[in-house]
Length: 211
Image 1 (tube, one colour):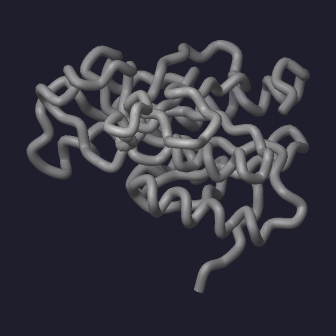
Image 2 (image 1 turned 135 degrees about the horizontal axis):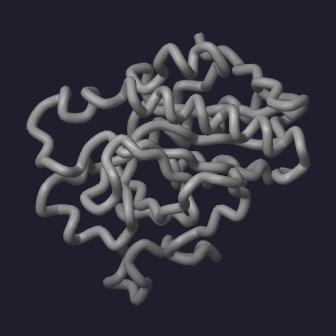
């Protein structure tokens, strides 16, 4: 049965952390937060987070979507916060809409995430239901790719809750051929995501970040 998650208190602020899959939730994060695991892909991410927010009263003051991402241009195992995110699956261009823009929805192709954690580098992100690997990166304009952040953002927007995205680069240097190509560096990313949570707590605590 689906259980309503409880936000973590970060410097006294209720923050809901959301992740795609348990392999990304390592011991460093386990010592700090209890995230909602939404599942892999945009559909699971949107459904599970929306269901959770529907049941939460009061709502969290901030949602943090965190986990891994792929990139052929960013430094592998490094951590980046999402400056803007787009939805690469959407293509209604035969109807005259630009690729990436949902018809009749008043959102740009890339949606800015204005809340930032001081001290972390910023990169653009493309969300979609496919795994990007090898030569497929040439068709992606954004710095990194994942399968959940845009879906988490749309759910958060429906409830008027701001969202921060944090992604560690788990793969992209070599073409993916098996599961270990994704999981082999997740322990390193776990440590860096935990450090980002510490930076988030410090920024909220001293007023540099005010969701």
